Length: 117
Image (cartoon, rainbow, N blue to C red; front, top):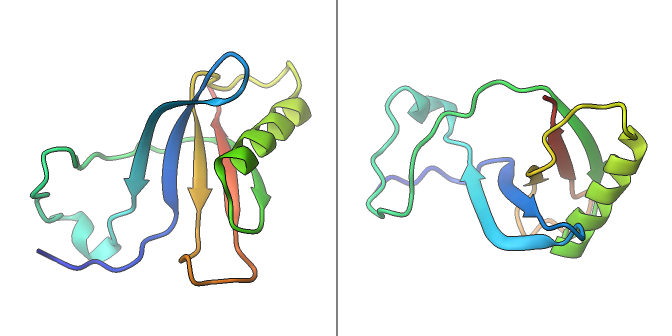
């Protein structure tokens, strides 16, 4: 019952298949605004959970436009290629992040994050 407005980024945890495509299982995470973090409102839907994301070190790439699944997959592949075999990061998931509301037509920001091991 509490409106918290738009938060950024909207973060989707993607679980890649062997061929690099995304599995149907995803996890969508929204940042709770600062003023609600000490005492977040209780979700009324059982499928919504509040969790704390621990600090992490990431490898990231940024791109613009209205991001689709294929864009995230392609940029994840480019990031993987740029990192080569030397970088240690979690290969079983990565984050797809969008920072802009749907009605923003220009200057959009999207990122792919790999979490360093």
